[in-house]
Amino acid sequence: MSPSVFRCVQCDHRVFPARFLCPRCHGDEFEAQTCASGVVTELTRSAISGEEPSVYMLATVTSDAGPVLIARVLDEAVQRGDKVALALRDGGIYADPVRE
Image 1 (cartoon, rainbow, N blue to C red):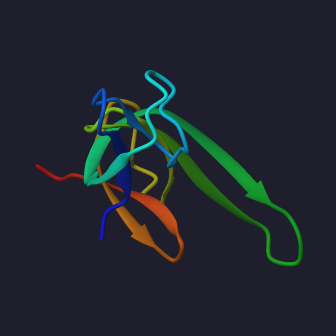
Image 2 (cartoon, rainbow, N blue to C red; image 1 turned 45 degrees about the vertical axis):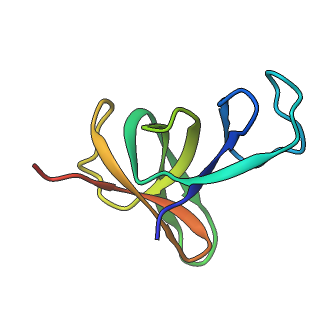
């Protein structure tokens, strides 16, 4: 399952996350559109301390639909500029590398 971006019915502007009003035309009617992929523009490594310290990666992804999303990356081989598939898992958005 892929995440959704939201398209304003009045002006076609796309946003993420969902909004009450369109930032461009102030319309209040949106249509959900599936967003299956995008391109990584930035990567951040973050650490969790505690009894079991761990490191995880987050990616800023410009979706093919337009809006920017933040996604968790499990494959450390992902780099800026890589095409990724976006998926909803475990209550979050994940970016998986697209192998061509």
